[in-house]
Image (tube, rainbow over all chains, first blue to last red; front, side, top):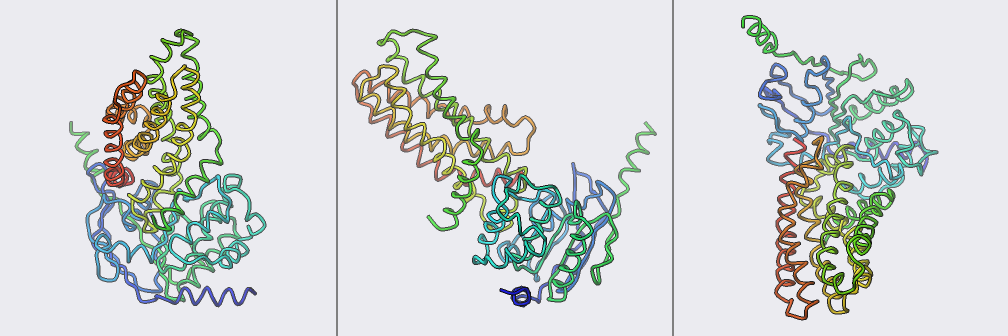
Length: 237
Length: 222
């Protein structure tokens, strides 16, 4: 398959579902009974991208984990296409791809086997898409290499290859730029843009300013002031 | 059994088989521990045959305990578990796949090696056969029960100690009935009752452990 055909196929895959909506209302995440940040609310529709930023420990990862329904340490409403994500998990998960700090790759399996497994959990086997993704990420030559032998940046590339192999509409990426070189970052921005123009949605966290993604809205997590209050109380004592 | 479960089991097995230490170690542990007893206690055939059921059973139980960690901890730390959940795989399917893989990789070799150890201990043929049968019925139970403890202690720093404390009490009925079946066979009395109870425990654990494990996993990942 030529590159162009692969691209056309990819676009077709992405277009399959392009009318989605993610609504977040007054969401706060708690850690040991205390809220991590001021409640946030936002609405996303197809084609929107949000960057969540904040200081270390401000709750970015916790927020993403709650959005994905992995963690339930939150208050507030998260709804996907008008339904609470906890009520209809399967419908939501069919459209979600989350890549976190732990990449979910098995170090003892080859790159191809890792990607193959995740693809076949939800989609029919499509070897071309995997080969194409690895080519784009310039790790095609290593497709038989064990993931455990790769560098941090290469591992990140393998995990990110899943965004091409699994055609879903919502990408939740936790610090996707970490360990990527300039080339990889450019690739990611380009791929994100294509996803957005095909009606996808992206939520990502990053400490750096990302200029290459069209219409990326930055969302800063505001720390709650219980920290100040509690230190005041401490000093009173 | 559906295709999803089979592909999950295949993946578990292929991962474990690639790290030799994880699947050879429990079996080696079993062989080493049991073969040290004749050296340390007594070489007398009569006494050895009397001790054998208990020794084989305790060693088998501990080596299953030893094998559990390899199936859960790394998967949890690498983010594989949460990716499976996000791909819509239910927690109970994950537990079933891991327990079945765990049994195929650790439990089944124990069942096969046990008669050799029995010969080493001068056990008669019938007792040896019952030892094999009782291990065949009970090692999957141990894998399933162990999975509950593993799911509860995922991500804890000293999970190993806690795991032992949590699941040993649940292993004890299996140990009692397993060892007593072999004991009964070696003195020539009826052992069908003990085997029936082992079978019942197996069915119970297969039915209940996946749900308990899935609930525990949800709490650990939260």
